[in-house]
Length: 530
Image 1 (cartoon, rainbow, N blue to C red):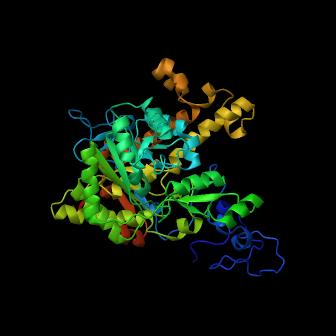
Image 2 (image 1 turned 90 degrees about the vertical axis):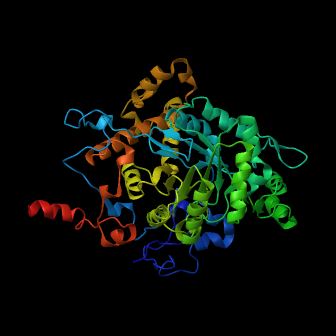
Image 3 (image 1 turned 180 degrees about the vertical axis):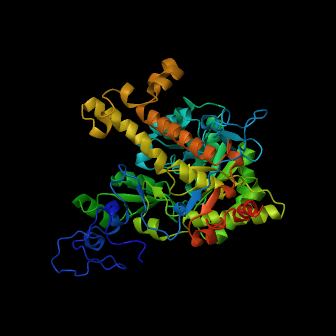
């Protein structure tokens, strides 16, 4: 069975002419000389590197669609007719007290100074991609009013058109970074969530940590080793040769090289219409990593987190073991295939350890360190999550180490939906999928009046995209409360691996979760034989 059909996909805007396609290559069974397209090979013949990337940049997010042999759908959640774990102290469990709306969905992470979140999810790294920039107000305020953590991704300062560097090449002023942080803080509840600013190689060289630490007094900074969508550095597209040249001079990798005369001529003729800006590969050593942690603490950061990608088992062990020694406050492990605003489409589909598998390895490694008396950092899992059932499974499968799930596209979409509903209302062009609920914001958004009452005069500053994210998070909370109540867990910390069963023997073998025909068999046999 072929797990992915290559050479044609909606993400790259390509299709096969024939319905009969060779499974391995994705080439039409009969390829005709004179075919007018439009498979990836056809388009690559004249557009080259452009076909590597999902389009249109700045208007789409893309997620790989490869089918893996085992994923979280191969697990089911256990339900029970007895018991209630995690009830408030002094309250006896019963039909009138063990009600799903009282389930506590709060979580927290941190080595010594913890950060709480109202629900166990937070945003993916919203960095230098255009879709993150143009939707930032919706994303940032949405995360703030939802009481969850927001991750400001890599390269935000580096691509800031108004960036000012000092004589040493360090950041003196970055209006875009200032906007990102200030927007989140407009509605940030000090008791819940935080904004994390992420750093890669270029960010470190530019002095991002020093800038956000001194100017904005941020308490947390995040180092980045990688992500699940790609195993190279972050990327964006730019459509101006002047902009491409500017980024090249700032030290980024830019393809094609805008300083070459042949590229300048092709751009002038209209053959080249866009450039890609790439970040460098990092090179991790234990000594350099721990030295950087010490340096960041000396700058004044109270919490340090790390984001790593779907690398080999070796890098996973490094992240967990070095993270333990560094006393990281959170380690986010992003599995393949992930989603992104821009990553090479073949890479998204064909590299890295898938999320289910890398989480299984994470649990094994955490257990090994724990057995050796070594405390492991709090863990977050990322890579393809969008619903509360998937998050419950990730929390249970990784218990007690996994404290939250990082959601990328699943938290971006509500922001874009809310924004677009506002646009459609202004245009008088609501789609039927929305207008069936009403023709005003009060009718369409079920949480509109709740937020209006809560924020009073400040409510006018909340964009509709933020209301969309808040509404999604409230749906997520209720759905999670229902799943937790059914499994008799009334607080997150009581969720355990015992609350899952594997539906296939392969899933059981990989995850260590009992096969459905074995789960609780010993306990059941005792009842039958009593």
